[in-house]
View 1 (cartoon, rainbow, N blue to C red):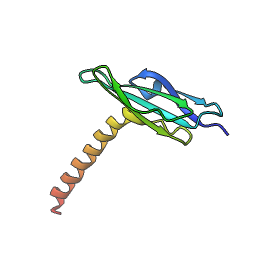
View 2 (view 1 turned 30 degrees about the vertical axis):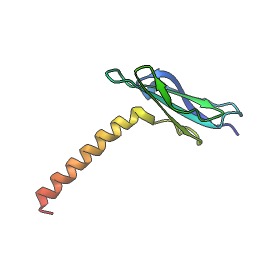
View 3 (view 1 turned 180 degrees about the horizontal axis):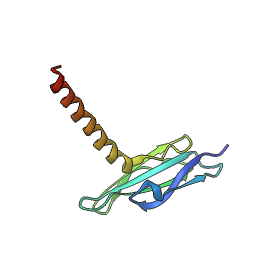
View 4 (view 1 turned 90 degrees about the vertical axis):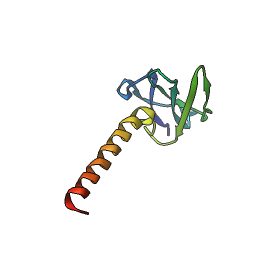
Length: 103
């Protein structure tokens, strides 16, 4: 059976990606992020028969993440920023609670 992945090209927001049924030849969902200092983080997602290697791009790095389950490339680099913010907020709330209760 075919894999299902998200696809989009050079976007900042996951909501701009579409759900697709990959071809029978595709074994991976791929997320690539372009990290160039001073510029917005752009992400591309697609189906692929192989897992591409990360590499250098002009002025920065290109990060690749591959996975092999349906819609596994739904998060990726864009959602990681939000996850760090949520983790930081949870840590601050925990410290505040500990100080307030005397733990």
